[in-house]
Length: 238
Image 1 (cartoon, rainbow, N blue to C red):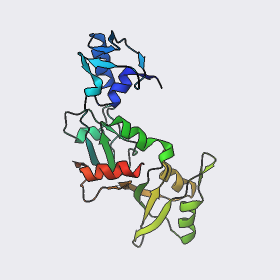
Image 2: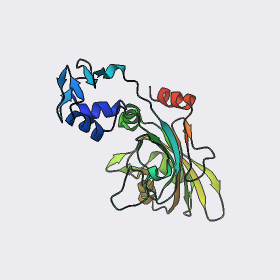
Image 3: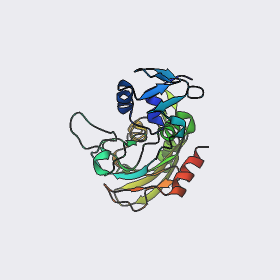
């Protein structure tokens, strides 16, 4: 399937799309020994691409995989026109990273950052249903009936949700924290689930994405994934 050359090379980790366009404009990229043009589409399976006479097939990208414990009031994006804090403001690296998926402004917890576009696309593709686990605190009364509704009986956008795993994680006199595992990724899904049942949501904290757990990572801190964690993540998507 044809794909824009800048998108293809960015997904391989060669450079950002903007940088690829710059290389094309300066005549450093060829497709089948012909100078590439801005916006050109290529067929990765058959077209031969070279950068400064070096075949792209010989290029071995270096991928970075980090997890961050996102604090509250931080955007899960690469930049913000209004100058608000983003997840990348907490990370010191020369790599061009981007967050995989989303975690809303008021929520906290696990965010995956990488420059591996292929893996990011697989993780976020709706068909893969990579599970994500959250701790959600409310001061609304939680009964067995409410737990069952949250798990199996919620409709959003006139469509019944894929069943979730819902259990009580901890309980105080006026607060209950639920552990909720989702198997689909509708925008603001948990907040909308709570709204649909009239439940007051006090905090939402993501603790796991598939086999990757946040552990004891403190708010605003990050760490690289181990090779075994990267392998487990990829295996969970097969």
